[in-house]
Amino acid sequence: MAGIYFHIPWCRKVCIYCDFHFSVSMRNKDELIKCMLREMEIQKDYTGNETVETIYFGGGTPSVLNAGEINTMIGQANLIFRTSDNAEITLEANPDDMSLPYLTELLNAGINRLSIGVQSFFDDDLKWMNRRHDAALSVQSIENGFSAGFENISIDLIYGLPGMDADKWLKNLEIAFDSGIQHLSAYHLTLENKTVYANRVKKGLLKEPDEVRGLKQYELLMDFAAEKDFIHYEISNFCRPGYISGHNTSYWLQETYLGIGPSANSYNGCSRQWNIRNNSKYIKEINRGIIPCTSEILTPTDRFNEYVLTSLRTHWGADIKEIEREFGPVCLDHFLIESRKLLHEGKMEARGGKYTISRKGKFFADGIISDLFITS
Image (cartoon, rainbow, N blue to C red; front, side):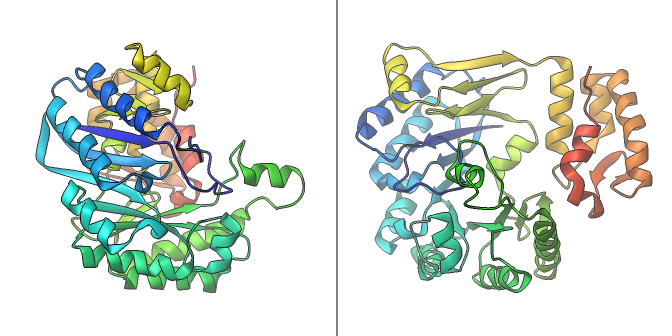
């Protein structure tokens, strides 16, 4: 299977924590969309005629596009690639874009899954993050999604925010799970370079995230999701049975995916490529018939490390039979030796040849994964 990712590089406002590529000016929107359609033609062989099972509109803010533009991009993908009739087609959306008429148009355009950037159900949090919407719209957007006929709705929440105590985080979770959503992605606030947040921390205007408080909130998240019978299938992702995100799972299971648009990434099992993070330069090069990207061929060690990184983030875990088959006995021996201490400490579990990070280990996931890398 394969996936297609469209990076929509526009936002109407700058969130202080975001380091994704975007522009607040949409003056070249029409031309850039034409170039994204053209890029699909140039990249038509990238997926190797694998069936495209997922299409994902990310950003930026994809909901700045109208339904006609989205339908055109989906139609082009269907023309160029072998797309499944039952493909999961997701659009990330901001709550303030999600009027009932617009959502109805999206459904008719082919979108069948929504990922709503709620982030919080509290106005003070949203103001701190410089979000465009308020708490009332956070709730209304979900209700509008269901009213329009969507049956697969995910939301994003951020924890570890300044001023967010345990009671406030629990209230966020109560509202989220009581809303009827099928999927939740929850992320700890992070300090990314070259963001407004990082700049204000550097100037002493804001503090870095409180990691201790954040870990306690992550524990509350895991407990609350389990009580609501949500599957914790990836470090930051939870869903009702039958609603695992197909597109993001393709990343974690190392399936082929093609990224279209400025800053979009692509992967085909043996190499990666990154499109340029500049809208004007992207347009210029695509008009010349050139993909403006940097690429690298993955070494066997790179591929092993990526397998460890992606598989151990999931509840499926790392399979020692697959390690031996794909990477050979040396990599297998390394994995088994390095995992012994982690198993002894209760940070990993092993059943039937599948190695997973335990609940205890989830608090140290990044360190566990890096300990299992081959570094020389």
